[in-house]
Length: 107
Image (cartoon, rainbow, N blue to C red):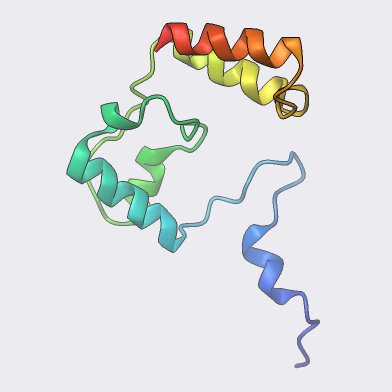
C-alpha cells in the first residue's frame, strides 16, 4: 500500500474536540522519569498538567501516582495564560507586563 506522505503526522493529530490523542510517546516516558527523580512538586509551575500523567504512567506499566501538585491559584494562572495566550505573547504591552508581574508575585 502506498503511503500518503503525511502518515508521519498521525501521531500528532487531535480528536474532533481538539484534544490530543491518548497515545504514549517517548517524551512521556522522559517526563515520568523526571517525576520519579525529582518529584512532581518541582514541576508545579510548568504548564504541563493538562495531561493525565496517571494514565500515562499506567500505559508505561508504572503503578506510581503523579497527581497534579498545583494549588487553586496556580491552576487559575495556568488556565488564564492558556486563555489569553495570543495577547500575552506580545511582551511590550501593558496587559502582558501586568500579568507577568502578578504571576511573579505568586511564585
